[in-house]
Length: 298
Image 1 (tube, helix red, strand yellow):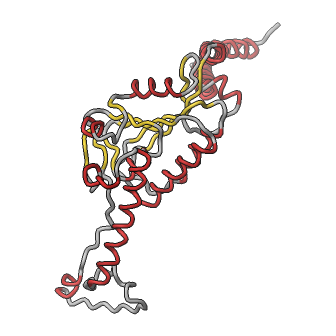
Image 2 (image 1 turned 120 degrees about the horizontal axis):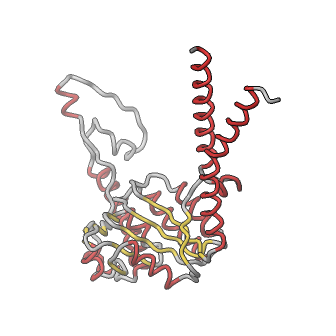
Image 3 (image 1 turned 60 degrees about the vertical axis):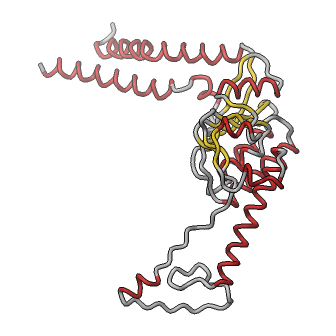
């Protein structure tokens, strides 16, 4: 004959099963349905902040380009710019990956795709922007150089700098910049700007001789940028999807692949069931023990 404790264990087991069964069934159903339906993987990478390091984006894009199961890539950009070197590096990386692993990559932007952000977008096969999106900003700015010389003098602060080289103190904020130093920094900005404009002209098939029309640091709306051939279409996410379907061998529905950590087969199959199971099981055990304890006390 079963004891009360054995009956309690059996009831507890049934309660746990009742708690975890529905989410497991639902998760298995959703995952297996996706396995059975025809779909095509499309990678999706988002750049939504100032770019100061290309490492993460380059690594993710390389992974997507190398994956034969991913037939195209969507690059979502909402970026006002960034460090010239990082943006140029990512531009070059995308171009190299396109040569090594040919597959279409399309940019879609809603609010801003300017300066370094636009530099990166120009490496892709097509740019789609909303009509009021800010596009362009092809130009170069060096770090803002404040001069604290007079402020230091006002507070009787003396600075002593020991350096070698005529141009080494060009960015010293407590000394006046010489004409030679200013000319050097200006030449750096000019050369960086020319590299930027040349890459844009080449990829967007624009005239470098007419760069004052579309470059020179100017910003345009998506509608204006379209007339200047700085973008390919105006539109939104849906337009980008149409463009991808016209450029890549898409069969069935599009399955978006976002950057994420590697997951086990169990995680892919059951999704968040494990965490839900632990929470439900813990709550069930606690509630059962609490009820039994209260009966014993009473």
